[in-house]
Amino acid sequence: MNSRQKKQAVALAALSAADRARLERLAALAQVTPEHLWPDVWLYGFEDVEEGIQADLLADEEIAAGTTISNEEVMAHIRGILDSHAKRKRRTG
Image (cartoon, rainbow, N blue to C red; front, side, top):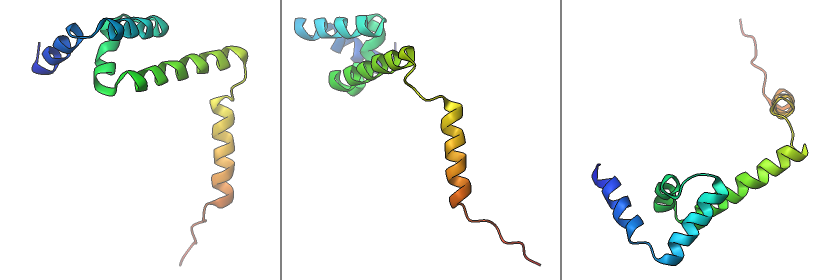
């Protein structure tokens, strides 16, 4: 275990009961263990990790509902934009 992992382990052990419960709730939402989620929480904080999990869950709902746009459609649209705005190279000589 390196020093970073030791610091994370010490911080995890020192969590308050409320923070431990929050970590467990977030881990359950993300369908991972609290220990798996802890390094992200330690690095980025509860708020950022919770926001990311909520965004993932919303994206999963949108995909399941069929309300998303396929990657192929997006790429075709972007190619069209680029083609219409890109400067053409001039032939010289």
